[in-house]
Image (tube, rainbow, N blue to C red):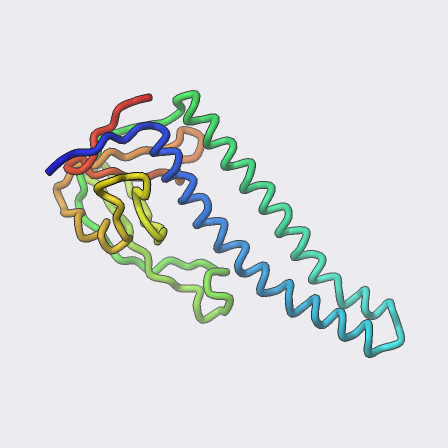
Length: 190
C-alpha cells in the first residue's frame, strides 16, 4: 500500500472542512426561522393598517438575520485564526492507537429543525490514550488526496482497532482536530 504525504496545507484544508460543517448546522436552522418570520411580518404589514404591528412582527426575523450575520463573521474569523495558527505551527501532532469506533447519540438542538430530530447518530473514534475524535459527515475526507479521498463510510471501513493514527489538534481549541491513518499517510511538517 502506497503512503501519501500529509503536509500542513492539507491539514488546513481538512480542518476548514470541519469548521464549515459545524457552521452549516447553525446557518441552516437560522434560515428556517428567518423565512417564516419575514413572511409573517410582510403579511401583517400589508393586511393590517397598523404599521407598528408589522414592525413588531418583524422583530424575530431581524433577530435571526443579525445572529446569522454575527455567526458568519465569527466563522470567517475562526477560519482566519486556523490559517494563522497552522502557519505559525501551533499544531499538536500525536500518534494514537485506535481502540474502537462507537456509534453514539449526540444531541444537537438545531440539526434537524425540529425537536424530534435533536438526537443524531455520530461516529466517535476512541483511542487508547483516552483521546476521542468525532467523525463529522463531510462529503469527502482527504479530498486533496490523489489516492485516498474517502467517503465517510470509507473512513470508517478502513479504520480498524489497533491502527495507529496521526491525531492533529489545534493548541487553542482542543475540539478542532483531524485524524490520518498511518497505514495510508505519512506526516511531514511544512
